Length: 277
Image (cartoon, rainbow, N blue to C red; front, side, top):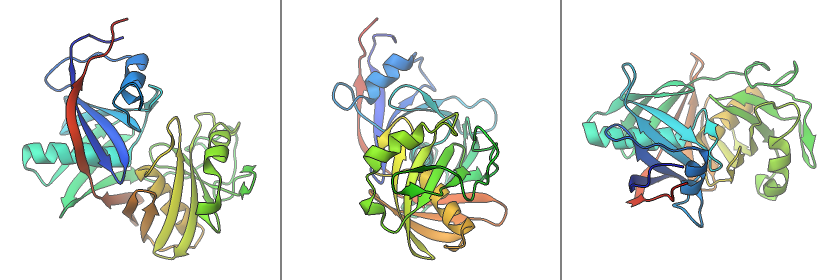
């Protein structure tokens, strides 16, 4: 599974979206799918929404970062996780801005007071970008389940379906989320968001994360929700998105990039030894 020596880690969270961060820049740590899942297990391991691996930078960036879901599968993007790792690297280097390389691309991060902001890159909205299994209008997708229908498809480095609803609190997301995540039109599955537009500058969002389930916050999901509301003409290009864990500031720039800003925190540090096998 992995080597049997103790693996140092840092437990972090952004709005309750929690992560186990493992730094491999100065030591070898070999983890397979089973080992990653054991770390993420909330009963038998450390517990987290995602495991984040910091690797030495390949070219130009402050570090490379890999993102893994609780089942050990790899994810392309994680906004809150990127902000958490950026905070660690900025505290370490004393810098106020830096770039982290991910599977989804190079993400530029900056400190703003007590918050950390990340440029999540270009928003993609073509059907092939989501991706979908067939051509469709991503502003009005023919996908429905129970009370949820007519979602907006968005890719923020990873796929999202955003449902605009009258009352996000009333949606049975634990029941509907896993069904929609595995919809036949979604060959790579998707994160599922339900969003209520309280005003043109304030959205309320709940999320079912692909491979993780209900989480307190999802940065890329907040970005996708803002994009969906803006594309529908319901929101301005700069909004506050309230998640179960708190608020994120989202701004969709005219150049197509999307910025996300919010708090981060270190919960605790420690080490874990995984069983051999």
